[in-house]
Image (cartoon, rainbow, N blue to C red; front, top):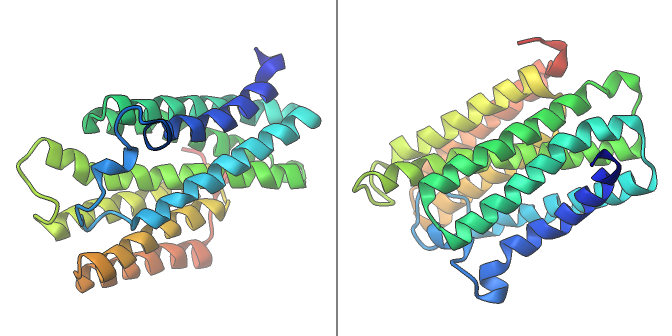
Length: 252
C-alpha cells in the first residue's frame, strides 16, 4: 500500500471534486449546498466563500504529483493521514448528497478534521529539518484543509442543533453565531498552540469568517452580528500575529 501512496493521493485529488459534483453535475442525490442555500442563517458564509474547496483540491492534487515525481521519506509520513483525510472527505461528500442527514454529515466532518490536523502536526515537526517548495506545497494543502474543516465544523453546529429542535434559521441569531465563533476561536488557539505554526490555517479560517461577516452585512442585514464577527476575527488574527504559535514545540 505504501508504494502506491503517491497514486492514491493523486486519485483522491481527482475523486474529491468529482464526488462533490454528483448532484449538480450528474443529477444524483441532493446538492450539498441545499442545506444552507437561501436560509439566511447568521453563522453561514456567503456561498461564494465555499469556492475555497477548489483551491484545496488543486493543491492536494499538485502535492500528489510532486510526491509521485520525487518521493522523499518525509512525504510518506505526511501523506498517510492526508490520504485518509481525502478518503473521509469523499465519504462525507457522497453522504451529504445521497443521504443528506445533517447529524451524520456533522459527525463525518470529524475524521477529516482529525486526519488533516495530524498531517499538519507531522509536517510542522519537519520545519527544523529544512524547507523546500514541496514542503511549502504540503503545508499549504494540509493547513488550508485543516482550517476550512474547522470552519465547516463550527458552522455545522447550529445546523445540527436546528435539526433536533423547532428553531428556524433566524431564531436565537446571537446564540447560534457565538456558538460558531467560539468554536472557531478555540480551534484556532489549539491549532497554533499544539499543532502547527503555519499561517495557511488562519488564512482559511479568516476566509470563512469574512464570508460570515459579509453574509450578515449583505444578506441577513444583521449588521451588529457582522461587526461582532469582525471583532472576533481581528482578535484571533492579532493573537496569532503578536503572540505567535508554538506548534509541536509545545507538548499536550
